Image 1 (spheres, rainbow, N blue to C red):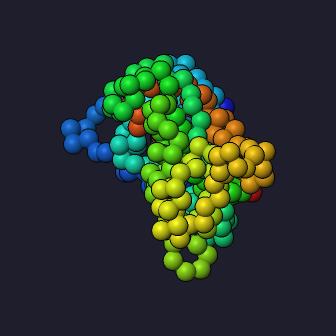
Image 2 (image 1 turned 45 degrees about the horizontal axis):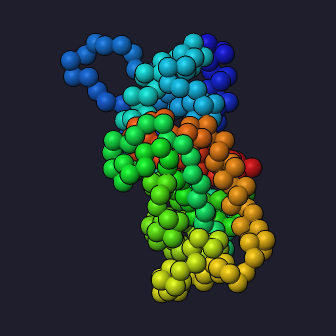
Length: 272
C-alpha cells in the first residue's frame, strides 16, 4: 500500500489534486446496491497521467502499482472526457496562473506539427482524405515558461493558413490580476505559412498586431528571435508520449491527451 500511495502522490501532487476535485463530477450512486468498490479518483487520475507521460498502452498499465486496471482507467478517462473535465481543469489552472499575473498575453506565437496516425479516425471525417497523418497546432504565449496553449487537430493536408483563425478563436479568456478576463493577445508571431492578406486583415480587425514573415522578402533566420520559445514548448508537448503517434481512433481522445499535456505544463509553472 505504501508503494501505491507513493506513486500516486508523486504523479498527482496535492496542489493538482485540489484543483481536480473542483471539476470532477461526483461519484454515481447505485440504487440497487452491491457491486465492486469504486476505485478512488486520485488513483485513476494518477494512472491516466502515467499513461500520458510514459507512453504505455492501457493494457500495459501496471495495476499492482496504481490499483485500477487499464480497462478501468480507460473507462474513467472516457467518462471524464465526455464531461469535459480536462478542459475545465486546464481552464482552472490558467485562471490560477492569471490570478498571479503569470500568462503574458502581450506576445504570442502559432505553429503546428505533423504526426503519424496509425488508425483511421471515426469521429473526425475531415481526416478521411489522408488518414495516415494528423496535424497538431496551437497558439500559445510567447514565453514558454508561462505558456497557455489552445490546441486543435486537423487533417495533415490542411494548409497552415486555414488553421489560424479557428485556433486563435479557441484561445480561452483567462483571469487577470486586475480587470476582466483577457482572451486575445497583443501580438501574434507566425512563419511564412501564414503570410496571406486576409489573415492580416482578420487579425487587424480584432486588434491583434501581426508579426507574420513575408514570402520572398524576409529570411527565415529572423523567425527564431521571437518564435524559438514555441519550438521549445512543442518539445514539452512531445513529453506526452501518446502525442508522438495517434493510436486512438477517436479524435476527442487524442485531443484530450494534448489538453492533459498542456495542463501539466501550466501546472508545473504554477507550483514553482
